[in-house]
Length: 309
Image (spheres, rainbow, N blue to C red):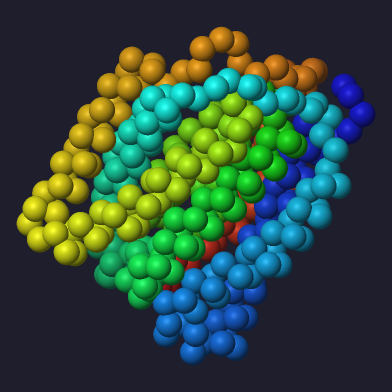
């Protein structure tokens, strides 16, 4: 084992850093909405109260904490290239899994809504409804993808990438999904998080995942709603065709394994306790105190959003 923290301590410290990121963000958002509630009536104010606490305060604190973490097994990301055609295949696959798992989430929230006696709210959809297209584009389609890829791909890989690509993919997807803190986005965020982690681990280039993230968010939060709103029956039909084609084409790409990068996986520095099956390492990671704290906080937020709003 190289100088640095053990696998257990590394994962716990990583989980604790994300716990602080989420806790500080939520606390400041609550304070902002309490003190500056009038801003909630404007589209720009709603986005600002959501994102300013995160990126102006919580993220700098998170980075300071994470910088102090010295992992025992440093890893090096791969250097595979992603062609334009390869990127488009990933986009189709991502759209397919997004729509597919969104349907699953809609079914789950519908069932919970019947138990609750009212609809389960989707925070992102509510923000879109009360915001201008420009604000939605800047915050949801530009700022969020850039910030989230940096937080959940680059910074995370620097700390746990040495434990293997699969462990990194599973842990990264888990952290990313819970960060959204609502059932409506939970499932597809996990799958997209896994895809983005996989791409970053093999290429070492954040621009690929940022562009994918931007494209997916732009199609989902801007293009499709505008087509439905202003395109009439033809616009709605076009979106429906996009959904079906994306799911079908994504299934073909997945079945034919056209998503894999050629060559060997990125080298890692796994030794001793880190050199275990990915599922086992993932389970051990989730049982560490820091990860349990993060999971508990996010689970509590999901329950609040699901049943108390």
